[in-house]
Amino acid sequence: MSSVLREDYYCTLLSEDEKDENDELLSDCCINEFGKLWKNGSVPFFFNDNVNEELKDSAKKAMENISVKSAIEFLEITKSTKGTNYIEIIKGLEFLSNVGMQHNGNKLWVAEGSAYPVGQIMHELMHALGFYHEHSRPDRDEYLDVNNEAAKIANYKKRSESNSVCYSNTLDFHSIMIYRENEKMTLKEGINFKIGQRIKLSDGDINALNNLYPPKVTLLSRIQALDNDILIVKERLSNLPVNNNNEERLRLKKEHRELLV
Image 1 (cartoon, rainbow, N blue to C red):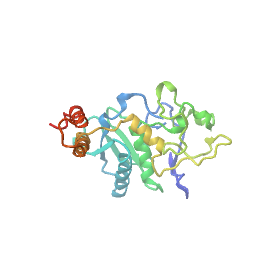
Image 2 (cartoon, helix red, strand yellow):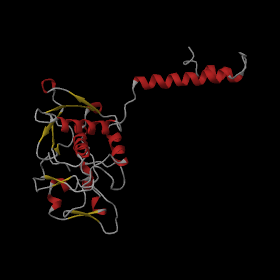
Image 3 (tube, rainbow, N blue to C red):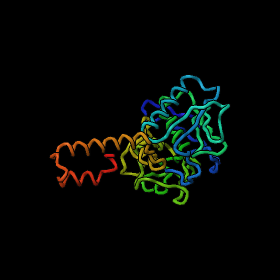
Image 4 (spheres, rainbow, N blue to C red):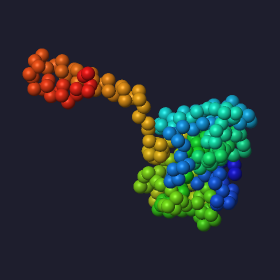
């Protein structure tokens, strides 16, 4: 497997060699095995000693791009403090990742030479978070022609409805999780999209990510919301006549007495 580099950003994809279709390292909508989701969206990670600073910077930027759109929190740890659930980021000859959390640790390989390393690492991190390839959706044949030989390869294998979940009714042509058209896979005649971008998460990617890992309501946000409610009630009271028999004043005090103690 090697990175395919072209001049446009729809090209920093992997050209897949034939592999064992059961090889779990080969990343093929979203998992429905909730035991493979990261608890509370917290993802510990550390870098193997062979990862250079440039690749580290690309990986951290990829993590930031995912975290800013979701409840996912990547937590850098050291190898000596790792538990059982973590991602080890390793420099290799290709980009590769497990799908979903592995209970003996995840491996995520990064490589030099990609024109868009941040986007490619985002793709692999999404696999680690539980995403299959978008072109592996159960309904992909409505949108794509995948040749018979490619359909046997893990990275092009169609997922069944029983072992995957999709959070949209149609294929997301803008997803960071779909490959570009190639000799193995083409869009059906009459469908005109450019697929395979490695720039950013699509709206569909973000929606699915926030369904897999619902945003957390923090204590701080609750306090801020409560403070805002108190200010609103007090402002409304201040605009009413200072009369304890005023019906609107009495109603507000009764309805919001827990805010006005």
